[in-house]
Image (tube, rainbow, N blue to C red):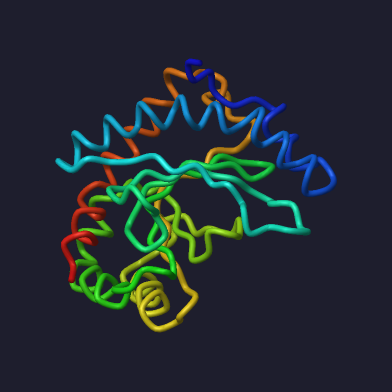
Length: 210
């Protein structure tokens, strides 16, 4: 299938009660869209990074009781998994689409990445769009708009990412479920690609940090 955007029907998935029913809807409604979008993003990100990329679609396999409150796809250069490497994410909560460069807590060298970013705060402040947002936990909706972060705010954010074991760093865009761009697949795909292009220098810096 071709990617045809996201609709309210997709977001309504997260109001379905019970693990089995919600997972069935995720598999039927959302995952085929992730596959169609992901195949295009893998190609684009491989070109931008100069490295072969692979698509991973969240299976939520560890869940035995509680239904997932969000779902996502990830793109990274590791064919076997994405959690221990910097990666790109697109996913849904019940009220938004998130588009992230994701550095999550499983990263073995997140402290070194945080230090590298701390040494480059000027670039973070000047080169990222002011409407981008920052989150510390991929399981929660809370996010800070970058226009609200001064140099001290960036410093505090990166110290938290470095020093708190479970802290994560996710940078990108959140789009409200009612945003009309979500139902325009061409514009949405272009916006996602533009977002990842803006984030590529940070991704490359994270990948190159040992």
